[in-house]
Length: 361
Image 1 (cartoon, rainbow, N blue to C red):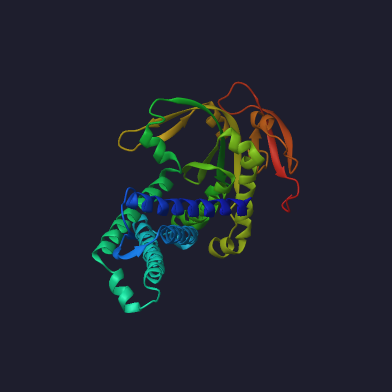
Image 2 (cartoon, one colour):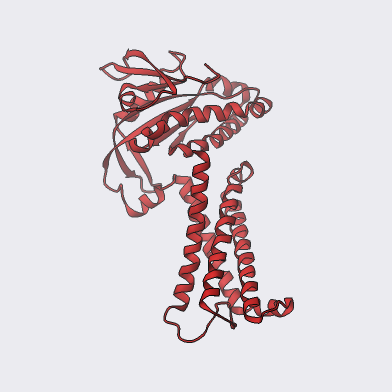
């Protein structure tokens, strides 16, 4: 599954940049009469085949490099940078990719036009005012793209577009799956580590939490040492993504046992509660706008998570979610009972979920 997602992302990046290169050539030469020439050097006369080949090669080169660079910037060292430094570093990196890609394509075009490569002649033809204008445009465009991408990550993937289009300007009803994740023994850990070190622990845990995006989860909000995740029913129930995300996160923390032990003297563990149901989605705030979720479904999920300590459970789910799951043979789902939840008059069926073949059980 993980490898499939990476391959899909790579192919999407390649396709986007190849199409972008074709589109640039099309717009530049549509309706053009007479000979074709390199956009950055009018002295280089081309034919249609060479122009198509070189633009495709440029798209492939930039697409693959862009994908690899994005993976690099997803590493720990980049995740701990300030937004300003990260945007600057990413922009300069991608700008360098553009320069290298255009240089390679220009050399290919030069050879096709002159049949031999003479470095100084090529260099003089390459660095022209036309090219400088093109590169300046690409630099500004790259900074804007990276700024928008970072803002999109900050408020949650997809939420920037929703705010821009006003999708939830009026309250809307929808069905969602909610998971409340909470650090176990958080008060004891905070007293042991102190405020600063406790905050660093949470930073590391929430960095490792990024693995849940591979299971289609959306991170709604962070509240202290608690995190709220959301799925649409379609993506959350498919392949049991809502359950797999929790155990993938737990396994990720365990796989870094030596790191957490050496830095904090413990391995963090998160307990979770889940529920499914209808909620209301609305855009709220004036000075600071965000997309908010309201409804009893959320409150129930939070209260189910609060029962984990009482039943010594790592993951508890509601009867409503249990009834919607299909093909969950890899999990042992046991009924705890009809449990009265705080603030609710009617008892709710609560189920304990464990992995059947986990080494922890």
